[in-house]
Structures are given as structure tokens and as C-alpha cells.
Amino acid sequence: MPDRGTDRILVVEDDRAVTRVVSAALRNRGYSVQSVTTGEAALVAAEKEGPDVVVLDLGLPDIDGVDVCRRLRAWSTVPIIVVTAEGAHERKVLALDEGADDYVTKPFSMPELLARIRVALRHRRALRVVDQTVLEVGDLVIDLPRHAVTVGGRQVDLSPKEFALLSLMARHAGKVLTHRSLLEQVWGPEAVDETQYLRVYAGQLRKKLADDPDRPRILTEAGVGYRLVDPDTSDH
Image 1 (cartoon, one colour):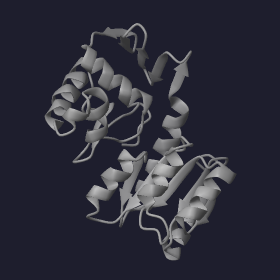
Image 2 (cartoon, one colour):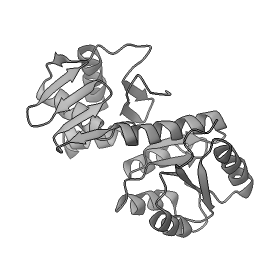
Image 3 (tube, helix red, strand yellow):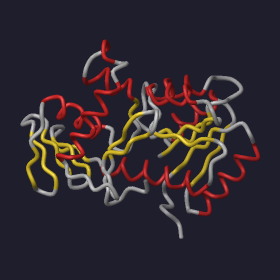
Image 4 (cartoon, helix red, strand yellow):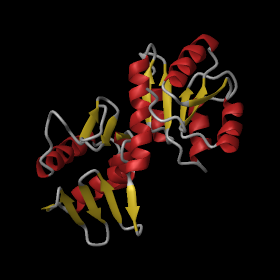
């Protein structure tokens, strides 16, 4: 059964064997697929075709994949899922800092990639901004000017830092936010190495939001960062 036939996926991969496998699997799910082999071609295709998701290998022959992320993010909000080589942890984190939303590591399974694509599409559609002041992610509602948070209609009292951290993750629901990005935006550039802040505050938020460990809304990406999801629809 097709997932959603109108969703367009841009696959950026210079290994033609990988491209064939990925493209065939995506088409079998009803997606429209365009594939290119270089970073320059990816930037042109993204501007011309307006894909719904970009699957981007970081090891391209012309432009570094991290730079492609940076250049795409300068004008587009399209979800970017980067494909990294095993052991390329620093490049993965750098790509996320430059605007990528998610990642898979080679060798990856097609069910894993398909799940990441579904999550990217779902959260792109599910995150609603009402009058530019209210964020909704599932039953989590954040009223920015009132600094008010409810979960399933229940009011949740948060400290200013807890509110700032949760609001930042809600603005980017479904996206992996790196430790560095979260620390810099919530605590300032002088705190980018203080990862213990995040462990403490993520724990406090989970407790106050009554997170179910079996269906968490705040996910830990080990060694990378955190992401906020709607637990009722998440594939994670």
C-alpha cells in the first residue's frame, strides 16, 4: 500500500547501486522519486522541483554534503535526512548543526529509512502554528506569549529555562537538535560544552510532562542530542 503518493523524495547519492535500491523501495511505497548524483544537481533540483524530503549522502564527489545542508537550509525548510558512513560521528553532528533534520548510518535497512521519511513528513504536517504564537505537537500545546503549556488539557508549570528548551524543540518537532545547538540557543554560546544541563532539564521536562517511557515524547539521540515527537504517531 502506498504511504502517500503525492510526496516527492529527492535522493542525493553518487553510488548508483544504492540509488537503485532506495528509489525502487520508495516508489513501491507510492512516493515520487528524483535522484541526482552531485551536490550541485541537488541544489538545482531542490529549487526547481520543491521536494517534500531530501535524502542526502554526505560523501558527494563535488560539494561536501554538510555544505549542501547549509546552502539548502539558507532558503528552504524541506526536511533533510543525511546518510553517513559508519564511524562518521562528527560529520553527522556537523550536518545536524547545519540544518539536517535526521540521519541514518550506512549500512542502513530500508525499513529504517522509510520510518525516518514517514516521521519527517508527519511532523512537517503535524506541527501547526496558530497566529504565530501557539505551537501544537500532538496533545502538547505551548502558548508562547503567555508562557503556558498544557498536555492533554492539563496545565504544566515550567521554569523559564524549561519553557525555553521545550519551545525550541517544539518549533523543530521531529528534528534532531544537537547538544551544541540546544545549549547555545537556550543557555548561550559560553555553555556549549555543558551537556549535563541538558540531561538535567530533559529529565525534569519528562517528569513534568508525565512522559511514558514506552511512548516518550522527548527522545534521546545518544551522543548527538534530543528530539521532540508526538508519541501517538512516532515511529521511534
